[in-house]
Length: 212
Length: 239
Image 1 (cartoon, helix red, strand yellow):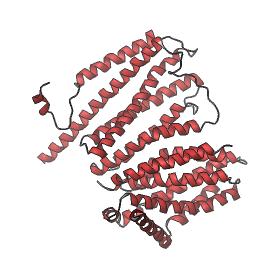
Image 2 (tube, one colour):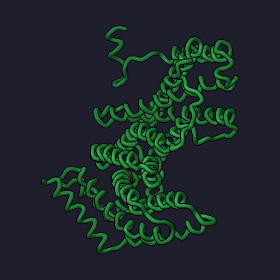
Image 3 (tube, one colour):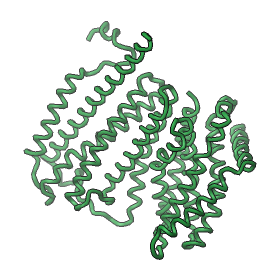
């Protein structure tokens, strides 16, 4: 129970910080809208649903990268990570809380992005919404973990996309498959398995990322 | 070897085959493999002509690269779990060898694609696409490692990322298989029922040659890296 309370307190801290500073979410919203407009001009003629659904996933992935890149920046700037690591709680709670906070940001951005996509391009099906939910989990779990790694390196923001994109390829496969296939079941199961597998690995190894 | 000789070895280094013997063994095996591939194995399999011979090396190099990545992850696990002092360096050298062999996989695969389909790259070959994903992943491993100062943190982060790699391999493979709604005919597989006799023997020799070659290169690089570290320690002691 203390674990849940710790996670709750840490996640609330991140959400409060965002609520007061409003750094990340407005940037994500503006970015995803701008990307859609760029796509309109990048796709010649009248693009089919297959083409635009691919671009939707590219937009989601890159919008998520914005939030993931920011996730550990306040901790670095204010040097709070040392304090969090020293706090008498399980270190994996830091990762769980960060993942939850990032998940909230990403979901909020998608609440705007998906209707916008439907307005600009094509309708969004139920399977796509489910795929978005499952993919978000994987993106945030793995991305936050890698964000914690990237933030301590010299290259910092530069490194996160490089570390993240190869690991995100299975997510893209599952998500696009679920969006376009007639029977999206197996793709959704694949996404869920990916989430579960990587969540367990991240949860088990986060200790080594923040401590020596 | 007597017990006394074993005690004067540096700490943490188990008894090993001498490097010279390994180098000689790889030379002999690679030469034998070349002779078998070009003179013993049949010139034509399923009408693919002479170009199919690249597969003896392409496939064996690919398995060697995977073995290197798995060995790297194993050493990474040793580092995180047992705090083995030598494991971080060993893990890095394994991944480095994996990247070298991985580059050869992409090159040989590209050559085969050019001869078989007329293009240098085809997205229809699952194994080749998988390799590209894995290759990108491990290139990022180097970016991560070179962006950190030497020390326990670099060792930890590299180890964790190397562990992610071996999980990504089967997951990506499943993903790439899933991504193909249309069916691509399998043109060539070594595990098919029609392959036996000299083809199998040649393949086994080529595979053994690549494994031994990779291990020899690993040993040489690791020895060089350890020497570098010792030299740096000595310099610091003198300064």
